[in-house]
Length: 170
Image 1 (cartoon, rainbow, N blue to C red):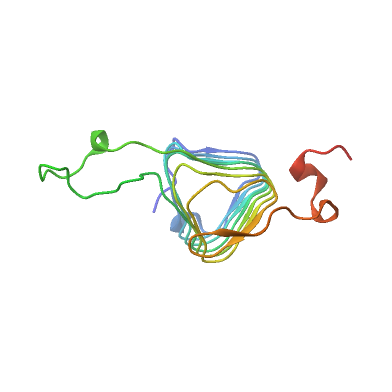
Image 2 (cartoon, rainbow, N blue to C red):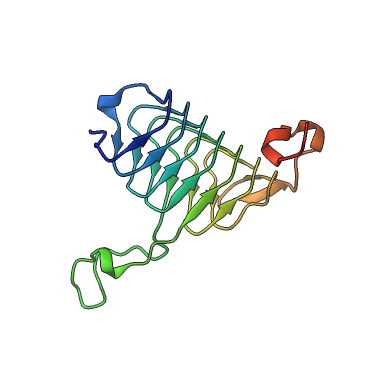
């Protein structure tokens, strides 16, 4: 598995086993850590000081902002209607689908084995439970879990939030 020459790595990025990742055409911010068996596709952006845990898949069209935790085996999608073939039976190609972008805002935590469907925004400081399937936008600070992901709490108490996540002055 390669790290291709078109990958833009920030300062002090740590890739635990570079021979066991697949990174191509992506951007990875300063001080981010990437575990083994991670794939990050062309057109994906990972912010600074993130942790992308092993066996995770970040596809084209996904933007992960700074200080985001991505647990083991997290999957992102970018096609709302995936199919192997077109209506007339041809193998589906790049021109036969529409990229749906996904945004993960600063300070989000995504639990292991969660799936984030395309076209959603996960607000700053939100937490996604392990195994959840995110099918729609998650508000800032919310805690969601389940299939489909549903709010457990609308917002984490201000005393529990990190000021730098929510943009409040110190």
